[in-house]
Length: 192
Image (cartoon, rainbow, N blue to C red; front, top):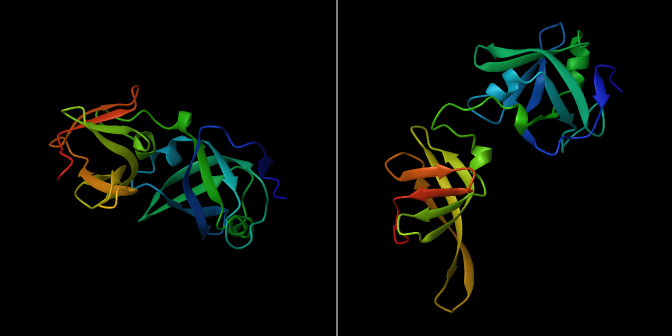
């Protein structure tokens, strides 16, 4: 067991935000692959919860708390250092570890900005109050983000089937995002 890690329970609001990909340098730093293009949650949180990789072998089991000393961008990578990890071999033993951070530790987003995790599961309705479906996922297409919405439709044989529709997540089509009411209102029709 690594002394730098402390066995713990995963917080109920924990979100997987990245994974450790490799050691970096000689003094115990490690590279992190964030699941977001804007890894602010990684930078702002000083308590990361690690779980072993689902593939391969990791130096620990169960959920472990790691106290972060520093996380930053270096070139095109995110790198981090933890308290009590000062050796490359120890950092290397963390390779593949999944990183979780409590949602309550995320920085407050700017006005009209949202964390994707907060949008997944929201109901989507159009201006006429027609239910368009539920946000299943989001896709980054470069210049914009797209809502992937799952809905149930009836096919020609009268069977219900699960379908997807995509709506660009831009102000031209999105009228309102109400996190409290778990609803997104869009200017979109079912036949688009």
